[in-house]
Length: 80
Image 1: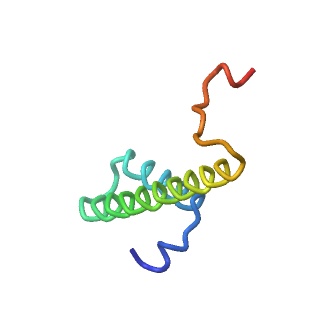
Image 2: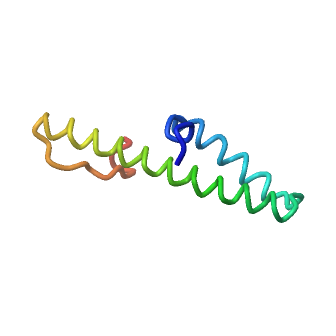
């Protein structure tokens, strides 16, 4: 992973990933470009997953500091 990839925001990563998916779904890319896009998409997916894991860990730490041991799953019951 390059320094540029490490510094990309979660939102920017998702936006670029959505663009790649759209381009690949169109099916107009030559094989070599499709493979490059696929590789980039995999890297972006990993970056996004790591960002989500880090955010979840921070939330867990903050909750434990508040005396809560676990995250509650969000369900429809919690919405109303």
